[in-house]
Amino acid sequence: MLAKIRLLQIGDIHLVSNARSEAFLDDKDTTFPFNLKNIISRNPLKTVFRRIYEIIENGDVDCVLIMGDLTDYGKLDGYAACAKYLASALQIGGKGIHHDLPVGIVPGNHDIDRGLAKDPGSNTKFAPLLQALAEAGLPPLPVAKPIPITVPKGPSRAELFLLNSCWGCGEEAFIPSEFRTQIAAAIDAVITGPDADGAIKAYYDRQLDTPAIAEDSIAAVVQALEGTPGSAIAVLVAHHNLLPQRRTRLAPYTELVNGGALRGALGELGRPVVYLHGHIHEDPVEVVQLPNGAPLVSISAPDIPKGFNLVDILFGENSSPLACHVTPFRMDKSGLLKRETPISISLSNGRRRSSDRNTGFVYAKIVEAGQIYWPELKALVENASPNLSDERLTTIVEELFAEKSIDIDNYDLEQKNWILRGEI
Image 1 (cartoon, rainbow, N blue to C red):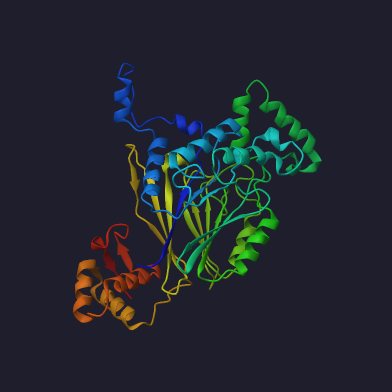
Image 2: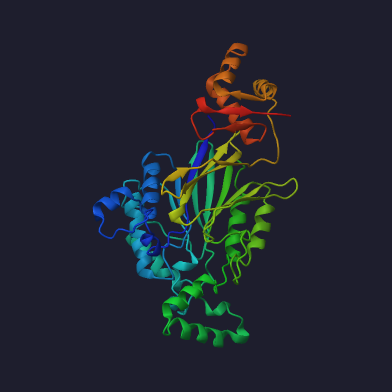
């Protein structure tokens, strides 16, 4: 089997509002027994976190990554409550039984209290967030500098960089100077006025906060990756999306204002990069690739009541990144959390099929059949090439699949269920 690093991507949590998400129940009988109601219905938040914990408990994850927006509208008590909930529900961080499991958390725009953003110093507004994480036994989030996390798997590894995209959130300094004082005063008057709750919701929904990643952070990541061997996959983690979202959003500053600069810098590295984010509450997987260049894969996690993602990085026999498989877990309309069909992205620059004799033989047999079941292929190979082990056959097939030379139906199931398809 090929080496694989598995990342668990958790999107926006928005405690406390998502904790009040309605159960999957058409509740019209107010006299129905409450305890029985809990048995026959599911709360989306608890259902999703229960499944995440099961995956962690099975030891099937190499790193947990949380995309920010732990709370709503800068509510610091909600942020602290969410940090404690994460630590206890998933048993992660220094106080949990899974304390050895790497965890990465980035800030979201809803985590920033606008009142704190008025205090001097660009780091001030992040101080209570850091304190809440520390009290829950969770690792710190990135503030002035990226936080690197190395996840090894034999000779291969993932080099993760946690980035702060929330420098501008709530900052008067990022309003144009010509009308900064007047606009800041008007915002303060409205969000503290008679309709404070509605006003502050509108403020956060319309993104009056200039999301950006500091140029020094971009330079630090690029410099670090320039000295990293090709056997490592680069994974960047931030709250805001790198690419414009698909659904038109009529609001200022919905994406990173310097997303193009970051995208250009990553595209010129000449190596595949995976960018994980949240923020838009949707879940597209998109690939940007220059001609003859390496792919930049942008993966969005939905907000937590809808589910989460497993992101698998597959490495070839030469230990270089070969493919990225994204497995969405999504809530259906009946309240069941289902594992959906994985999305597979090649991390190579087009087809690079090995000249190895066995690889050529297996590929030829799949193409000749057009479609073949795994047990059939295994029997065929055993008869024609008895020295080819099951492990080597699996590696060959996975490499052909990762390089887009063949397709595998039911790849997320056991090998006996695989259906292999190939054509020239």
